[in-house]
Image (cartoon, rainbow, N blue to C red; front, side, top):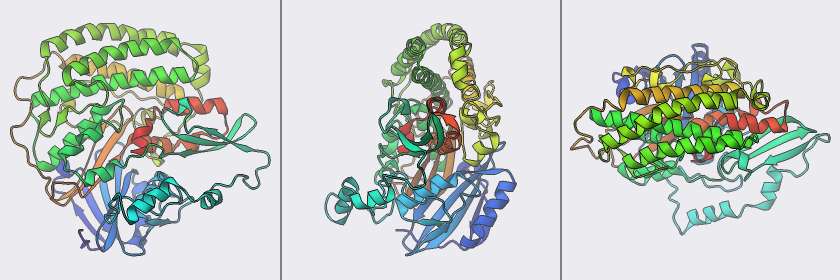
Amino acid sequence: MLSVTLPPDTLRADKDAARHGYACEAVTRRDGLRELCARLKDQGYFLECLTALDFSDAFELVYVFSRTESASRFLTKVVLPKPDASGPGVGDIFPAARWYEREVYDFFGIRFDPHPNLKRLILPETPRIHPLLKSFKGSAVGADAEEVLSAIHEDRAAFDLLNPRTPKNDADSYELNLGPQHPATHGVMRIIARITGERVLSTECTIGYGHRNHEKMAEIQDYRAFWPNLGRLDYVGAMAYNFTYAELIERAMGIEAPARAQTIRVLLTELNRIASHLLWLATFLLDLGAFTPYFYCFDDREKILDITELCTGERLTYNFFRFGGVAHDIPEKRIQNMISDFIPAFRQKLKDYRTLIGKNIIFRKRTQGIGVLSKETALAYGVTGPSLRASGVCRDDRRVTPYSIYPRLDFEIPVRSEGDSYARYLVRMDEMAQSLRIVEQIYRNLPPGEILLPKVPKTVPRGEYYFSTESARGSFGIYLASDGSPTPYRLKLRTPSFSNISAFSELGRECFIADLISIFGSFDAIVSEIDR
């Protein structure tokens, strides 16, 4: 295991920001982090990601800060000597840190002070395992196995202590559980609502029911073997997740995919974005009681899946991208004919959707003015994607951190200012039109040439890297710490639904029970990427 040799209170500008993904790196003392965070907030930064690294003699907290209008990422580190490591909590400065700090405590055992609710986030409350420690091997025998079994068979007394059956001082209210298997939660998730009558007083999201520990899996296999995991994070919009991983490793290796491969990546990613939004629209309306649009949306989505299946051989959990290109070439003429038929038909269907859905008085009553997310709250929680742009923030990684061929394409970033569930619907409808516009620009102009570099390095140079792309749900980022070996030393997956749903508690107050379904559905959360 590596050891920490970083000096405290150092600041350096990265000479190759495009490769590493951040412009500046600071190593600060533990007692100076809160002051630094306050200064960054005053300068317009928000907390994009927080994780930790486990070294032989210390932990290293890694904070990634970003701005809304530029690609000016700022990476901050705090070294915490072992064995009794504890970090400074910054949740009162950046509310987004509250869930991230709980996650770091969950996986590494690092405590944070102050913190309003420091308990496990993804794993059960009572076990003592911290699976992202380098010392944890998860073997089938020995101490690790006993701890894993204890996670399955929880200590009932400890559980009752953490979750009392009769809350104190709440005689006029009670708890209502949505989930953990309610169909409106779009996955196995639990929302605990404190209610009085029909009015919701507060909500708390409980996640982790589908945790698979993808980040630990990354540490025990080489870079190429991790490809299938990307398609299983967001099974609805997997192309963008493959895109992020490919670009991250290619930039770290100092290579670039051929032009034809890059164009194919963008083509499939934008088609996949439309398919993802169609699935969201269908299920969102179904949650609200509208049945007919479900069939229309799935009919259009199937046409897209026919195209992606012809290109990749897959319809859902895609594993088509490779370091240096794509797995194989696509049947260009057949794809062009299929897209030529799809574009005018779907453009007309978008108009039909706006009439059938957007002008429906029941749909408007269920969404307009419901779940209003202000610009300030959205940034404080690190909300991203359509949910952020519906609150008036024009941030899209395809423009803010340009990658691949996107800088050469003509498209707009839809933005609304209302911040309610209806605005989030409108942004996604507009995004489908813009993705169709991108597809129309490139599907007949695929450049000739190779689709895969003939030779690609097997290892990533030692260093730290961060890269993100714009997925259907928002900015999906990966932080990589490489020690030069064939496997990542640490690979952190910054998923958009994780950040977006952390803000749900701010919206699930002083509304009605039925509004919770509208608010949650409007965020388009995919629980598998939250749990990872």
